[in-house]
Image (cartoon, rainbow, N blue to C red; front, top):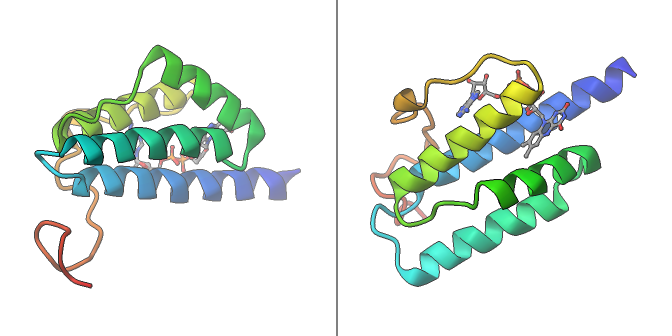
Length: 117
Ligand code: FAD
């Protein structure tokens, strides 16, 4: 039981990190195709998330708070907000979304996320 909870938490931390880091690298001025790609990604992420209970809750959250994909700031702010909604349900501390700016660094060593391949 304890082992399962530990794994679920590790999965959660890894997933949130990926999600927030993607938002921090999302274009400041996305094309309609960029926005659609992020919308689709989030919807499929919520559907396929391996913890079934978590996925069900998160899909309900997405219906209430549809993903914001019009800009990097909008997307990062939205992800921070929904993560806080999950934090509230799990009785965790809330994150100050004004401080999201430089918190998630991908370590890619480039400025805009387009290069470095
Ligand atoms: P996490 O919540 O994993 O956060 C990791 C780090 O991110 C924190 O230490 C902090 O530095 C930073 N952070 C915290 N809040 C924010 C924020 N709002 N914005 C940006 N950064 C932030 N677990 C369950 O038991 N039941 C569930 O129903 C459930 N649903 C989940 C749904 C999704 C979509 C995901 C990704 C995870 C879910 N989890 C669920 C896992 C849970 O959210 C945590 O990831 C896990 O409990 C580990 O928590 P943690 O305290 O280490 O911090």
